[in-house]
Amino acid sequence: MSKPETTRVEPAALQADFDAGLFELTHENVERWLREEDDARLAKLYAAADRVRREHVGQPVHLRGLIEISNHCVRQCAYCGLRQGREGLQRYRMSADEIIACAHEAVRFGFGTVVLQAGEDYGLTREFIAGIVRQIKAETPLAVTLSLGERPEADLKAWRAAGADRYLLRIETSDPLLYAQIHPPLKHQPDTPRAESAFEVPRVGILRTLRHIGYEIGSGVMIGIPGQSYAMLARDILLFRSLDLDMIGVGPYIAHPETPLGQTTSPLSEHDQVPNTERMTYKVLALTRLACPEANLPSTTALATLNRKTGRELGLSRGANIVMPNLTPVEYRAMYEIYPAKACIAETAECCRHCLTMRIRSLGRPIGAGTGGRQRT
Ligand code: SAH
Image 1 (tube, rainbow, N blue to C red):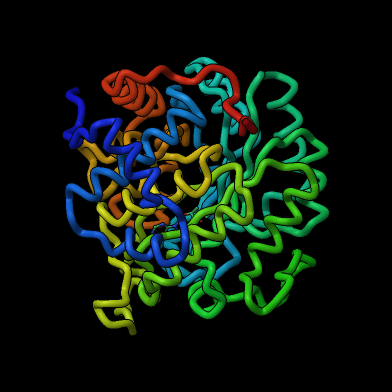
Image 2 (cartoon, rainbow, N blue to C red; image 1 turned 60 degrees about the horizontal axis):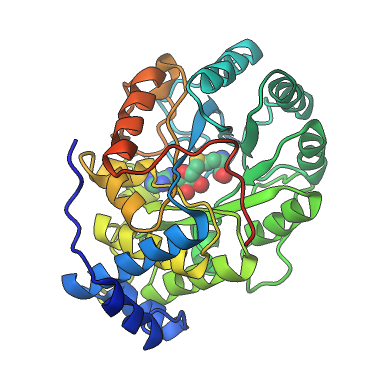
């Protein structure tokens, strides 16, 4: 596998650009970078992100094994293929034995972390998840990351007490109006934490709670949601910094034809609407690295879905330091269809591991050892 094409930027010239304040993240600068279309200038942005990544989180690429443990969901998110009420989707929930077997596979493959992700599924009870976390922590050296949606505080506390290390909850967008349109609240919401003001989205309140409970916290947004403007996306990136996130996942929004949002067009003009393109994803990834030098940033599957050949590598060269090989048993993969034509859907866990390892080696970067948690410098 060959190294993807990247334009070389001389270190001295790059330093001069840093000194000139080109990468200072004022709202105005961030929005200007998001609108930048000149390849030579974008090469500088990518080189700056790559330098900051190297200086703050180093060369290793950490592997997080993703286990998609259930596709049941009580929510009706307008963008997501797992939304409640979607017809024709067969639902599954993995057994404890199946999940634990995947965790042991992660250890055999040399991964430092497993990520348990699902729709918001109350069939995954507080006790069930706590038991799984306890068993993984007792039987393996893995860090455990949970990504199970907006659960009541008592659940989040019980899982942390059982040993869970990290929690991922993307805000999807920081704009309260757009958020309310794409992510309606549950009718009979159990006691989940709330936003502190009308100016922030409810998931920000939950992230603060998670940090208070003692988790490393991860969030992120989708790029190019219909109705998402450049100004909103610039505010998202600046919010990542003010929340001091430990992990940030950004990927393109991919329309799912069997969802309400997948059937709508943007109300914004072409001038204001952020495109859901591969290039925009690199810009956001690079700006996110500049905003949050120490954070762990994955090169996402959604990005690889737009460019199967070199998307992962380009993400790793433009700010990312994490990849998440899929450990979900093949019989369930296609059912975890948050968006269509997801990359790697038919691969076995062994194939995913092999392919991603080769891609990382082609960049001359080592696989990270240990659990790869946030290092504060
Ligand atoms: N139920 C959990 C996990 C959701 S799936 C939760 O809500 O947090 C994980 C992520 O997939 C979501 O946070 C969202 O950012 C992303 N996703 C969902 N639908 C998508 C789509 N159509 N295009 C791109 N990403 C999508």
